Length: 178
Image (tube, rainbow, N blue to C red; front, side, top):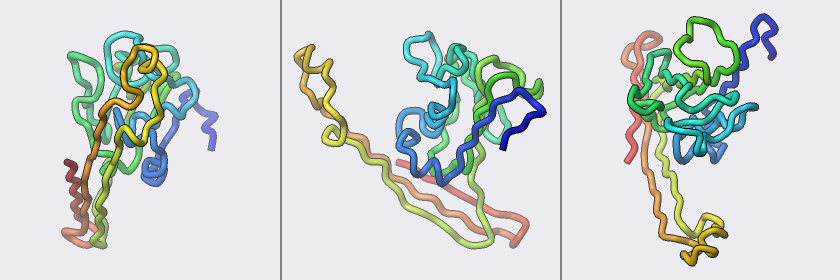
């Protein structure tokens, strides 16, 4: 729904959306999903910093948190910690005029919530697979005399597993990616 009590624009992406949208499987991971929000574009050549340009601000004006804890790289803006996509339960992007509690930045607020264990043991195995045969030919490569499909191999394997330590009270979750 729409919150009419604040001018803040908020977009949340949940685990199901992260798994089904291809934008989240490469580059900055789930943060790429913010490109589906209005007013968010790739950082392109807008200066230093990692991440998208939000509301016309430079990527250096973004703030990154994991469960509300600051994970900003102070030398070159962007997150210091990269969370594997399958370990993220929710990504929230705040833009526009957000509350002072978020402070620090005039761009956007990116907050990742980590998955948790449950009362049942659960797990998954996954692979992110990309190579030159899966991508379209780059016309600029042809103009420059380079191969249309330069060598590119990207295979990321991983798995998740979680469960209870103490029923209804304490849980564990682990994600490994190679």
